[in-house]
Length: 134
Image (cartoon, rainbow, N blue to C red; front, side, top):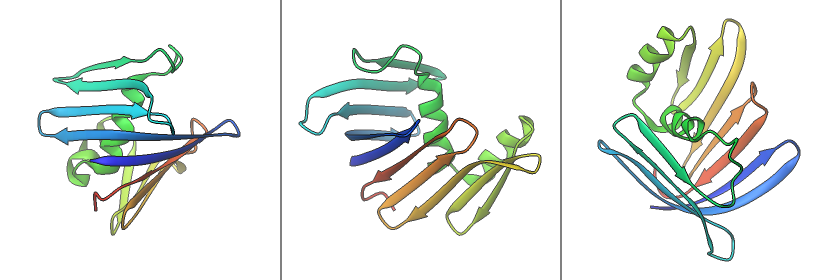
């Protein structure tokens, strides 16, 4: 489906459009700027992640993008179990999710009709995905 992304990192705002295909086989994301020019593609299959982009910095870890997507959309019971193995705790209320390391809130995910907002307090970024996925 088509989605719009608005992101914030280190006081700067970024806007993208994207096409996302996510199913039991993996995740494919194509990113475009506001004018429709291709900015990059991400593919996740069988525990292998690939990001090809001439625009995004090489320091951008595609594994973080996949992890954020999984935190937002994957089954909360399976996520809770996987996060527990990493020393993290997942709390859910309705469709909203909060992830803690000890008593420290590190990630908040708020879902509303047509939007998902993720705030990563640990790494200092946030973004909102808007589309028809709920």
